[in-house]
Image (cartoon, rainbow, N blue to C red):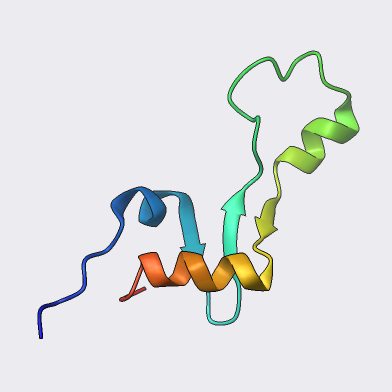
Length: 64
């Protein structure tokens, strides 16, 4: 049986912990100076995947 390949784009964007799958919140690249302080603070935090999406994402990273 051949080895499963890791989806490299997913591996760069997602972080796998023991129980959770984390991703960065969208829209952090630029134009952040116009955002309110509360919005900028919230953009710093990572988001947890929904359980159904997490299953799909874990399939793309078999060895993580």
